[in-house]
Length: 301
Ligand code: AMP
Ligand code: ZN
Ligand code: FE
Ligand code: FE
Image (cartoon, rainbow, N blue to C red; front, side, top):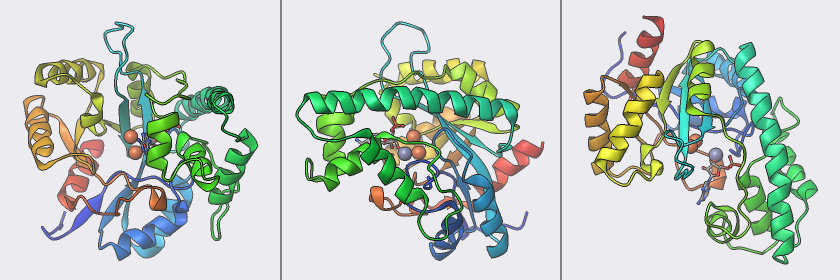
């Protein structure tokens, strides 16, 4: 590899195939404009955007890593007290792998059951919103100019939040989560989640590497609890930790790097860019391209 130290990558971002606002085929150009040498598309629960993104990346000669982000049940010890959220990134997955596609379908069904429950709760709180409005908004995003897909592969809470903003019920998506749809919100409804073992198995089956996304969101009470969680995940096959992320402080990055070292894990990093739906810039984490190269070597090795 001939990567120089002034080359950067962004290994975590979303497109209109999930809850981002940029079409998958638009991302390579935006990444190039942000000065990146490589990037990964990691949509929630789906690889529907990967093929279009890969083709556009090839044309622009920017390194592309096919990925996915799966949400798993954080209750690893089955205490019945799930806290925080456990998100697992899969890098270098085969986007067409049958088992992964089956898992995606199952997650889609879980969303299709949960989303109307949220709408029902909102209606009960006097908020006038229909599920059709949410689907319409998600589809409008996915079929913007130049996009290959005409329907979003997933409909998520950010889409519901956007409708609440558009209808004037809240001023921002952040407020929508705080008041209504976040885990402490009045209209929150949980969806059926994969177990961490199922998520890790699916990513491995598709030939990918599994990393723990934004560990700061695990809400581990202390360092010991976090270590316990990582140890459990390592037993299940975890390959790495996302050390750099938009929600991590410089102190977080250091402690997650130490954790990765202790468990001999790979490290990844990315912005978790969602387009205009969140105020996060592409490439803002300044992840060295060497991190991307190490992932590629690991998957080949
Ligand atoms: P869902 O997958 O439909 O349950 O929605 C999860 C999505 O909501 C993820 O993209 C999160 O990044 C986003 N999200 C979670 N909490 C918040 C929040 N407080 N503000 C904005 N977005 C959030
Ligand atoms: Zn998202
Ligand atoms: Fe996440
Ligand atoms: Fe994400």
